[in-house]
Length: 243
View 1 (cartoon, one colour):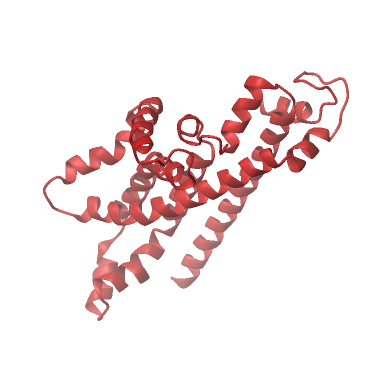
View 2 (tube, rainbow, N blue to C red):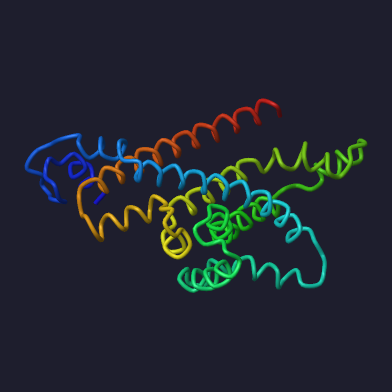
């Protein structure tokens, strides 16, 4: 199916057709020249970036708390964090819509960011928690024994060691937000995100612009994955060189 999208995106026909009767770049031109499409793409990038930052700021400390903490309610909190993975997204969307409608947050970028952070947080916590469980805490204790504070030891020793997991968590949080549709249908209002704009295009217009957007997304995601893989390899080489 991914291969078929490429020729359809360059179709000269005014509707989705395979194989196309001719080839043209008009649908890519329409995407970049239409402010509703480009605006939706920019809003999706902004919300995804804000979601990534917010989930990391919350998820990393929360992972430390769940892995190393020993307090009443820790097990309950652990189950609550994982709940968005278990509960169907449509149920979460209805609940969040009811809450945000009372708070007048429907159609706002920060409301959509909070809702997306709710979906992305479990991935961050699960990945970072797994890294912390396999981390050798004696390295952190050695730093404390040499005079570093607990915070400095975590900042200078622990976080650099689990950096690949944090980067993986950030990537998953970004993709979760950027590709999310159901919550966007409830909360975005007139401010389209790119998945919602694509859905509306398929439902109302059915022209190859949506195929062109799909090709752009495939290329961008592939480039990000390759960049992430190269970065991970460079980080591994640097860590081995330092050792």
